[in-house]
Length: 152
Ligand code: HEC
Image 1 (cartoon, rainbow, N blue to C red):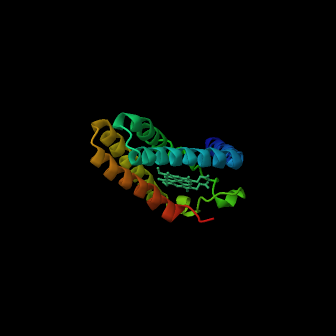
Image 2 (tube, helix red, strand yellow):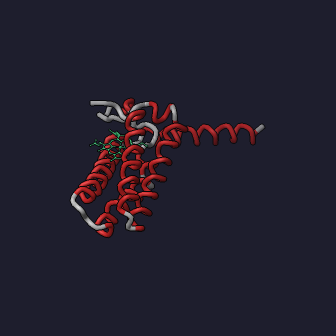
Image 3 (cartoon, rainbow, N blue to C red):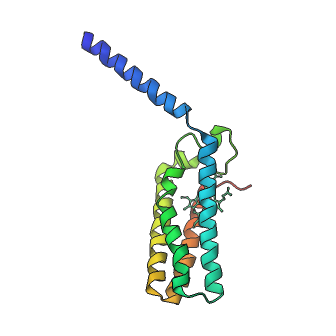
């Protein structure tokens, strides 16, 4: 009996601790990091597009495609539970990110896949392949925004 009671107590403590860390989430900081990260991705995609338009070499584009690969690996960490509209902090993150976690994960994975292919195309130096994959990557951003990012 004593063991059962302490197990129940232990579970209660674990819950209390989990509740504390949830409440302690600094939503404003998380959202700022996320929006800055997204802006960084926007800058990289734009830089790549401008480079393509102005006849930059594939080698010059590498910095942008590498940045997209690196940040696509971070997107998953930018959306902790509690950093949505319910946080009371201004954000364009829709609550569907958490209620449709599987769909959101698919959108993230798709973006990481397309960014990886873009980086590979840049490494190959094939400008037509880079252009095509630039479009596919942009569509991966848009697909997620269409579903999970609120309009202004
Ligand atoms: C898996 C989903 C997802 C993917 C993929 C994604 N985004 Fe976002 N993006 C969001 C969400 C959600 C927000 C709103 C974030 C917020 O306001 O807290 C956002 C916000 C932004 C913003 C506005 C940031 C600000 O100033 O507040 C920019 C710019 C942006 N994304 C660019 C991009 C680009 C460029 C790509 C692709 C290279 C991309 N995003 C890929 C979900 C995504």
